[in-house]
Length: 124
Image (cartoon, rainbow, N blue to C red; front, side, top):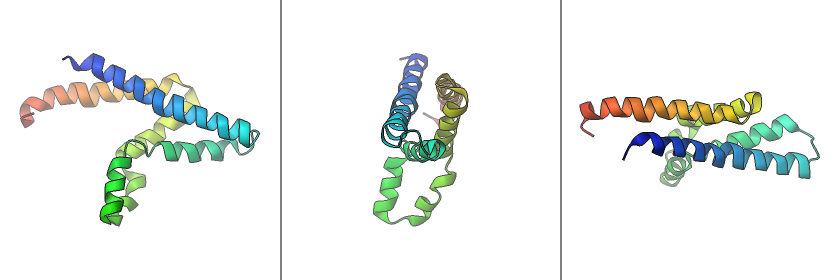
């Protein structure tokens, strides 16, 4: 199976699920319907920080259950969490297409190029 269609679909689906789905719909529901357009930026950033937890939640839950509080405290500086927060900022600043392009570029370099070149050297 060729990785390019797989990671392209995964990037678009994940961004739709997180940024375009959960963040935009949640923001609209809370900011427009409930708060009547008050506290726009605080609502956006609170939702963005919560939705950015989606990808790291399984690891975070394991650390919480195991009592590894040092790992839990390092949460705000983990690269995966920070990149998800950054993608929320991209959505806010530049629109819906930018987080998708960011995720596609990330997958291209990390999963396809680096993974394809590094796998033979690391025995995978």
